[in-house]
Image (tube, rainbow, N blue to C red):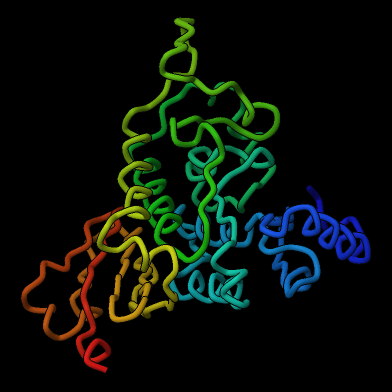
Length: 287
């Protein structure tokens, strides 16, 4: 917690001590900016990756100041370390220190963890169901989180569709399905939101693409559209293209696919949705 407020000399000794007890311990620091100075065997293996959260949520919310090109630049700058760090990055969207993800996404042009967001939402937002548009933007963020490089982290309750402004209302009790309080107006789990999380995170254990998603490299693919963000995960000869569309119109992703797939695939990405395409690079396989 608040790792930058303690000097590096302490963390270096701490790392040696922890590893002397458990050589396989994974060491994470809560750092809200790029944690490169703490990597490389000095302190942490990875960070609680707020730079990822800020970039992804601001784009998914539709912030006019954030284009797909800008999102790609921000993410690649964060994931510019040795793979032993980048693969372990704890990619979150929200946490105990921010408003709930759905609440942040309901304010398109508010900055991440903006105090104004929390004050404008108020406690009355705790039981209100998000709009269909907000839920769609949430799915964009969850899809990117599940398929991007690193290790995703879900703040407990987000998968149940919890809403609410900042501390303490973002820390309300989780509405477990088997412990329904029955109180009028009490928060209840949203099976639709849980289904979204299951849909995307199950891909990380999918027999066809799980290794590529967990261990593959990543590079951003320019789309020429501020509202369409695309990237490719690659491992050995497999490629997984992910295309997220936050815009008001469908996006045609055919030009981003290899020639053999452009004519045979329906590459339309509907409004507020994400699709992925998988293929094998035969040239690499033959080599």
